[in-house]
Image (cartoon, rainbow, N blue to C red):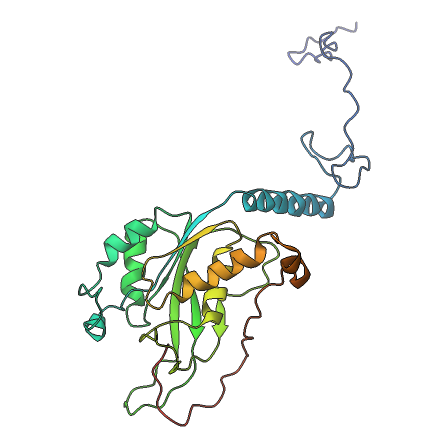
Length: 273
């Protein structure tokens, strides 16, 4: 006599489909190539492939950059007497002793972007102050060329430029290194020890992504070269106000080109600009 053996493992019957859940609607096409998105992609996918996802990211990134370019920024540049060398400027009317770097960094943080020139010796000290303030900065380098010297130590041929904030311009055609030899402008009545050449100013503007109608504050004017260079850019970018100006055009200033190698040292000692 056959008997049915009861089992404790009853086979579960499939649950009936929910009446409230309707059939999934058609997915929108790829946001870049407008092709159909494969069903294996997640529901929130906007693109059909990795290539399209990267392409749409670049488009949206550049759109955000162009949007910031339409809003003027407040930028600043500071070229104070380098730490330990303020005595070299004691004959200047604005001489006030050593610069308080902590107060200077606090003032710079009030701008949308800023750049600060310092010496290679003082770079660790300035960076430690930036870290203490929780500020993310980058360091660029200006290679100003070799000079004749009688020191037993290797000559310093570069100066760091610390910068933060500003506008990110894409694609970035500039770099964080400038190779440009500075020579003394003996015929300039406003010549001052440590003044920067025009090529440096235009390079610094590129580091900050400065564009008209931004404002660039020169916290230590010195010879006023930074303000003069920026006013030149603003003037060239302004629309012509007369027929003569329109005929001359609005070409950008002719900038000195930086080389990839140092030229030979000058035959006579020269103060760095």
